[in-house]
Image 1 (cartoon, rainbow, N blue to C red):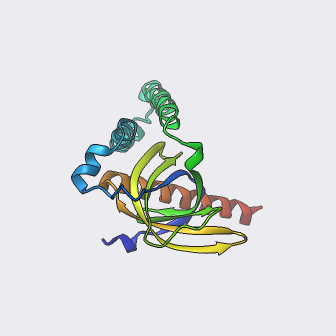
Image 2: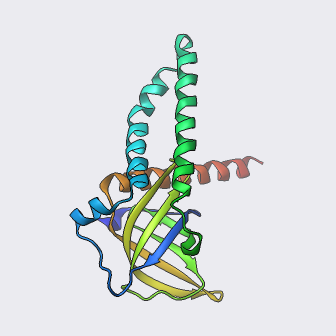
Length: 188
């Protein structure tokens, strides 16, 4: 599947966008793997573990294992809260933006100043569901003025495969949330 085949959803994620300086370059795959901050590595590993046991926990919903299921879900929530706090420390308010759309191949966000097409950026994406954060690099593919601000499009150029999976799950979650909301509005 090529990157262009992933869909995007309209949703607001908190992100950090840092333009690479003239003396910086997009790292090679090997350099990128070594560069990823520890907090983002932990978030990625926790996300992999969560998705792996999620189905198994759901299978425990029989009467005789409800207490165990509740206990495991509570422990998972505690870990997610701690992980969320740890990741919030990685958020730089000076570099903070909010996405308009995101997917597993690209995102768009609104900025007060224009970005140049082809400009390389370092990105940190902070997701609520699944609770995670992603560290990656991107390239600006477009920038259009919109009501005195700028809609900036970024295509990922360095992104771990497991983080792509997290973005797919997050986009699907947003899509389901939107569909449920529309169904409720129709029924009202």
